[in-house]
Figure 1 (cartoon, rainbow, N blue to C red):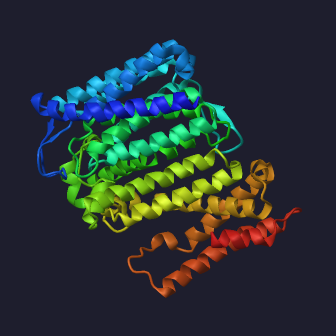
Figure 2: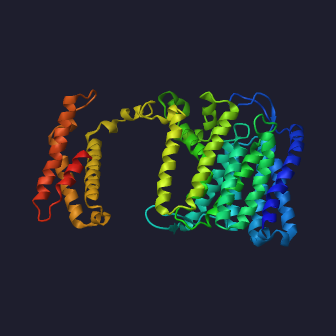
Figure 3: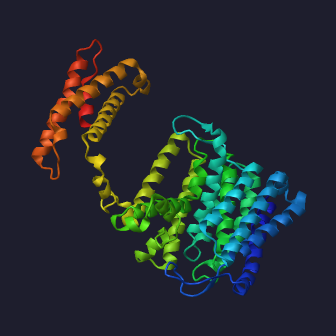
Length: 487
C-alpha cells in the first residue's frame, strides 16, 4: 500500500519537473504568451501554458498505473466506465483551456463548454445527491435538483480557481493545499481510490510549482487553472459522498474555501459597485449589471493585499496561510460531532467576515457608500402604506421572538391560541401607532425628544394588547411583553 501511494505522488512529480522546461520553451512558439496590461501584475511577456505540464504528468501517470494493473490495485478498483469519463472530461477541459490560452474566448463560450462537460460528468455518476439538513439531523435527498446543484458546483469551482490565478504561484499553491486537504480526508474515510488519484494531482502540481513560484518562469494559464479547478471540483464531490457526518457537504466547500470566497466576493462587490450613484449610467440596465459581475478587474483579494503594501511573495504566503486554515477547518469536520461542527462553522464564518472587512472594499460598505440613496427617491418608500406594512412585520416578528424565548418550544407557534394572540397584538399595536400620529411625521433630524416620543408610543402599543391578553383565562408571562417591547 505504501509503495502504491509513494508511486502515485513521485511519478507525476518527476514528470512535471521534466516536462515544464519544455513547455516554457514551447509556449512562445505557439502564441501562448501572457502580455502585460493595466489589470495584470507582471511587467513582461510570460508563457502561460503551464497547464500542459500538469496535464501531461497526470494523464501519463494514469496510463502507467492502469497498465500496471495488480501492482496498483486502487486504480483498478474504481469503475472503469466512470474513470474513463472522468479522464475524458479532463482532456476536454484541458483543450478548452489551451484554446483560451492561444485565442482568448469570451465568458459565454467558456461557460457553455464547461456546462456540457459537467453534464457528462453528472451522467457518469459524479453528483451531489444529498445536502446537509441545517434544520435537523442528517442529510436529505435533493431529488431532481441534484443536476443543477452538481453543474453549479463543478462550473463554479472550475472558474473559482481560474479567478485566483493572478499572482506567481497563487493558484497552483492554493490548489496544492486543497488537494492535500481532500487527500487527507479521503485517507481518513478510507476512500483509497480517490486518495491515490488526488496524490497524482498533488505530485504534478508540486513539480510545476517549482517553476511557477515567485519569480515565476511560467504561468498556469487557463489550460492549468480550468484543468485543476475541474479536477478539484470532481474529486471533492466524490470524497464528500463518503462522509458520515451531517456536515459532509461542507467539507469540500471549506477545502476550497479561498477560491470560493474570492469568487463570491468578486461577484457581490461588482454588482454592488454597479449600484453606486456614480456608476448607475455606466452599468445600464439590470442585464448590464449582471453581465458586469463576470467581467475581470483588479480588485481580487490578492490585488487588495498588494494595494495594502504587501510584497508579491508575502501576499501569496498570506493566502497560503488562509488556505491552510480553511483546510484545517475541513479536516476538523471529519472528527467533530454535530455540535462541535456547528460551533466550528460559526467560528470560520466570523473569521471570514473579519478578514473581508480588513480588505477595505468600499463597495461592501453599503451603509456608507451611497448604494442605498437611490432607494429613498422611490415614491413607494414615502407612502404610509409601506411604512405600515413594515411595522406590521416588525410587530409580528417581535411578538413571535418574545414568545419563543419565553417558552423555548417552537411547536407552540403553530397552536391556535398563539395565532389568536398574535392577531390581537398586531391589530392593537397598529391602531396605537396610527392614532399616535407617527405616520404623519417625517424625521430628517432625530433628537432626544423625538426618540422619547417614539419610545412612549411603542410602549403604549405593547401595553394595549398586553392588557387584553392578560385578562384571558391563560395569560402569558409578563416577560413576553417586556421582550416584545425591546424587540
